[in-house]
Image (cartoon, rainbow, N blue to C red):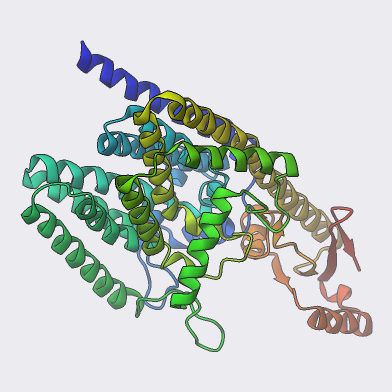
Length: 483
């Protein structure tokens, strides 16, 4: 009976994860494609087959074959239906949160601690890019397989069986093939289990050696396939993504912790938290910290979580430039596994203390998680609005090009972001090919000086007679101003 009750608890936890992620991401589920989504879809169209779609050419900016396979599967099963793609990403988030909940519960022997970690990870608004942006699917896949690796590794350390070690390494390999940002977590898992004293020394050593060998093999394959370990390069040839800086790593670790403690405008350039919501969420976080009995075991655990968060962020903060508001938060999708586990462990410590600490911690977690759900919906509402903007732009281009018989369109003022959501700064050319007219050529000209030159040529030579259409997007009116 107790076994059945234990299983049912995790069934209810899974249903809760599915419910909160479904409610939180509902505003963006059926939104139109945005930004790099069009580049992904266009590449799939050009590939012609699954093998060509998954293959990574030498010199490519990314090595993410598993992400490509995942997107190809969605397109093959459902066609170009944004709802199916985003539902897949939301499912990955819910399963990652559920697995994290099991993991924290197993480590703390407190099911309540697992629930707290799972719910925090499921509703954290910082996931919006990794989930609602289809082109960022790799981060969600990477997190899912990292959790599987951690679970399999923990079972192997506790029970033995070479099959569990093989499963852990297979999951780790899948996470690396989904997104390169998983690399620090693959290394952090054996470090975490060694820090917590899980398993025998021999098994811990074997897991660590296997993880290092896996990373070495990944680096070798990545170098052979795309010609290097780094990401894509700037116009002058410098490596944009591999900006390794110890000072930046320390600064962003502190920045992430500060934003988790005191929520601010962390979901985009304009933010979303009002003063009252910030005060409520901050008070809940402080209350949880007060409820924790900070004895040596808890202090040691907190120090370990901080160190693991620092290591997990090392590629996120050097692979691309995060701004002070944490825009580009898809890069935090994997490191937040560590933060959520730390929160669950804190709650588990307060729960074990009984008395006022348990009740204060429970109230703090419930209020803190509940305060994030409306923000998550608002942020995803931005993605829905961003999709609407793209549809309006494409409809305007299509109707005007047909009316004037244009074969080439040159535009300016295309928005890159709508609050924290991507719009069409990149990929609009592919969107025109896919959803307007394959024979229509679009040139997006973001530079104001270059745009003024285009306008001067247009006025002087009457380019409209040559089948060239020139227009500027009016953001306040949400329409094109055609010349």
